[in-house]
Image (cartoon, rainbow, N blue to C red; front, side, top):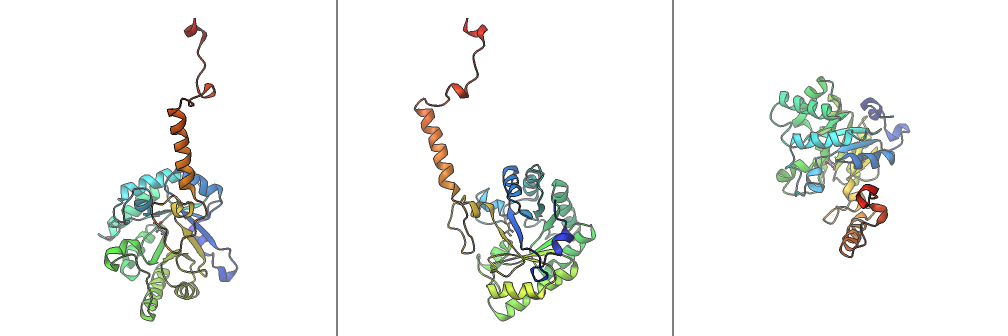
Length: 273
Ligand code: KIV
């Protein structure tokens, strides 16, 4: 059964809850596989820009494209809670527009939305929540800040920066976000943040103590085109399997082995007389 935002909000490990499992998916097959594997949440992440659309960052994906992928994921009718990622510039140009854009993701099939940033996004978070849309936060190495950060760099490496991150998280929690993704921070910061909050943290490169973990589908399965980040554990190496299968097909076509009799429709008698 699909977990609701309040049910996810209650999933703190220190209160005995099992860790939350989230994986990204961008289409019906991905969502179907993730559902069959029993994940708690599917994130239709703006990482689609990197791993599906071939961009170097997440800044090149539009709200329309995100809605398209949320619809494809929803078509799998997943049991998992579907989080629709708000892409860059869909919540930066005013509160009203942000609420409309969050609603578009919900109408496409998401159960909640995720957006990046702390105190600076407070008004937007409040307005989306006021529209009865559950919001997941995202702090740390937020990929939409790549230009401001000057690259994909581990965040919160000083006491001051770690304290600022925890303050941002508390502001989001006070506004009412139901969970928080924390990405690319030292493990100790992941631990301290998780201890400081009542809402669950879902880590990606934030150490072992967060209340859940998320990985990108293509990283987990070995479908990427570059060396995965340090925090990735690759559970399968599907890239070579896929290449091998397609090469096998190509060889069969070229050497006349495909299609065979079992892969062709029988000829009606009328045509053969
Ligand atoms: O878009 C995404 O895949 C994400 C995860 C890295 C959390 O935001």
